[in-house]
Length: 182
Image (cartoon, rainbow, N blue to C red; front, side, top):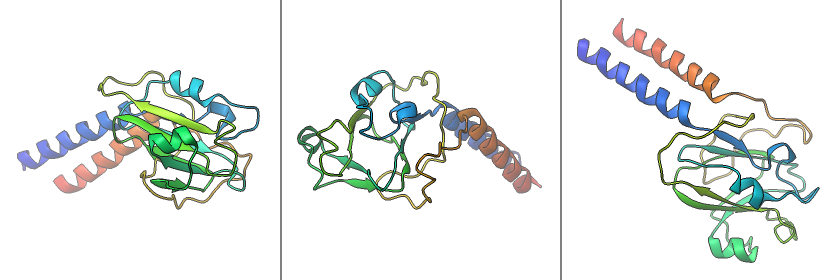
């Protein structure tokens, strides 16, 4: 019984630490994922420090944009013909689960050439991220199309802080631990 309690407590600590340290970034901040207004995604990405487990959220009008994960060569050449993953809901979350560069572009004709592409570099250090941005929708696994419904094109994503998500996860784990130990 004591061993079970210790195992559950250790699990709670590990999950709490992982959730509390992850940050959520909205690509382009309030501008979102668009070509309107000529956003500078290179400047946006270089102003952030991305870490393993962080989530990037692409918010856009799905009638006019999408998100493709591509190779470095396809990123540089704005080649949308061989994506490694595609998202198209208008509110797509991608968990950064590997270090190094993550290349994304819009696959609509002319959009990448107009600057709708971003190179997100995930640092190899395990240092905690700096200030978390405002928007934090539920993350979805990378590598495929999300199934979440798209909000109204002008709607802002529901904001959740990393600490509120961590608190919810911790409360759920504590409830589970109480049930297991009862």
